[in-house]
Length: 495
Image (tube, rainbow, N blue to C red; front, side, top):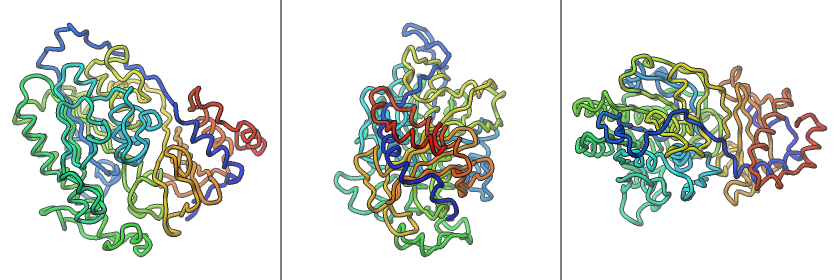
């Protein structure tokens, strides 16, 4: 594919690639929320009129498969209606296209390199507070209903939830069948109707005390198997991608056009049940005092860049996620669209800012994210830099850009992609059997990220490499290969 192997010399970058990976371990950006937290004896803590917070995470939902982000299928009529009452962030991105690490970033406001969940099966660093812990400290009743088995019970992501429910299978059964088979999907996930039923039952039992509730819908994740009456709502489409090559990713699947339709029908399923939950909030009288945040952990490749699935690439289809925030009783921020790039790590600081928590009290003061409340108030907020990473190491045939021979262990070091986004530019460091390559994309001119322009923009490559280098903490600075950096400067690739 055009531009898939960058214009920067692989050999010269190999040592820098390793050094940069090692050097990312301690990146930290201090955030400041700008609001005073209620003191512990503040009467506001006992005020039953404080707003509730509902955080909805729709697993594997790429933003561009929603009509509010330009999709031409009506996959989400409720979210389209909600957008008229809310703020839609047009360019929100996850730092990693894997569920466990992305969830950890969402709930801590920290990058994976800091919270320690670099892949499935890793535990959250104990020194980082979670959003649920902070909400509980502010007097909120907390609950989370998760639809993927083991998401919180084995990772520490349930910390702070009085009820963290991800018990979707019997002990020992998960892993007997791959997730991309029908049997595996049924073992690994709880359907949207059940998640919604449990959440409604819990919500209706709450008194006037404010609550923080998280709903996790796993349905759009493969295996795509929409239930009746949603299955068959969309006709298969003709795609420009090679079905035979893509079939090798998941084995026996139908045409890609049929798979995309089933994916869209899974989105429609979640949309229906989310509408049902909001209607239950209206009937219970809590909707008008509830902050609703809808987002996703990551997106999904559906043929782009010769790939299916997620977790192995850092292209837009896997990292661009929706973010919709509906603030109660605030008509001035309804039907608003914000084009600024924001990040999944900004969500927790925004919620804490909304309820009045600060970094000096029980807020996430050591997070890498920053509150989006200034944007919600119509104020200026400086542009952000986003760091990207992925831990999955691609394997397989040519269509998967094989990296056989690339070291994929230990986590966070070799064999993994890293990236940085600044303004219009996006840089990806990618491993190959011959050594690392750099890709640079001009997102304004090339939103699909298919044309590598690194060879024509060495100054931009240099600046973005410097951002990755400077993200290393004091304990890792010694890992940078200064001799190699000098060689890159001589070639014009480092400033």
